[in-house]
Image 1 (cartoon, helix red, strand yellow):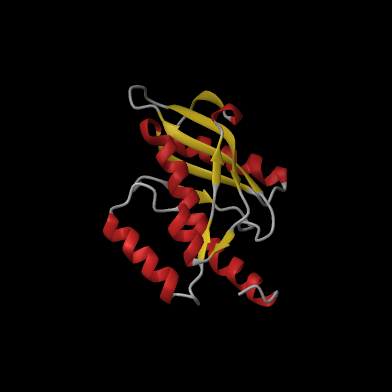
Image 2 (cartoon, rainbow, N blue to C red; image 1 turned 120 degrees about the vertical axis):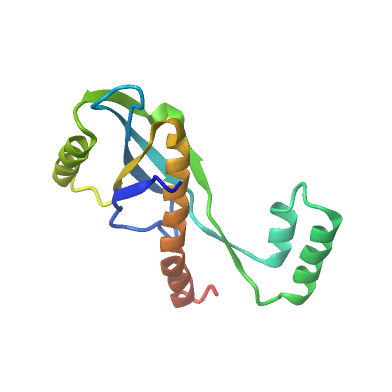
Length: 164
């Protein structure tokens, strides 16, 4: 996770009332070869965020937790009537991913990909630099950071519409 760097963030956040699809380019150096870089091109699908009451939270998200955790969730359900939780869902489909090996220094590849992305005019695209062996972790870190970035916008939208 520490070696994940988002070179270019998507311009838009996760949509409050619809499914959002982000295109990613994930660039990683091959560890055993000099100036060989793997470029993965794919998509991450973010389901529409949902507002969950403590009742739904305790029923859906505590599978496998201890009895103590269940008791706390029951207490929240009874006493936390004004609490609301945001739930974000992601689908990651490996079938959407294409890979290629580029014979060039990492910095050059990242620069060229950034220039290519300029021509796309796609506010939902991102460029991520990471570690080859842990590339899926890099995508998960990007996803979590994106959720954190989107949450306040989603909450504001729900409040404007009187849903919170």
